[in-house]
Length: 79
Image (cartoon, rainbow, N blue to C red; front, side, top):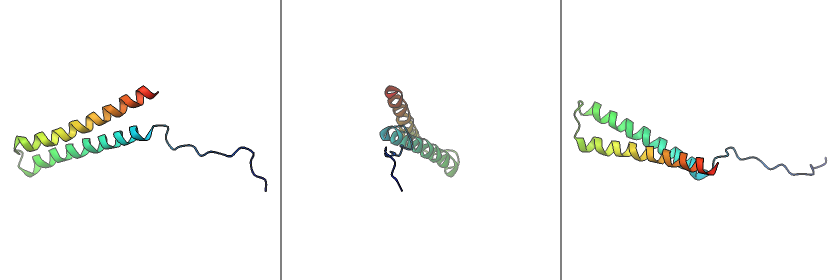
């Protein structure tokens, strides 16, 4: 058999750079985990958990949101 003249280079599965994709995934995980922890704390403590507990979980949600925003800004600046 003959080999093709031009070797075929496999395309990347995604055009998004790896760092942006990592930020997006970590942000999504932070949003989901923080939200789930807030709801779980409300359910377990009978609807009245200490405000410090909710503040920490809301902080996790805000960090996740910040990571998602950072990923969006980096992706937008590269295109």
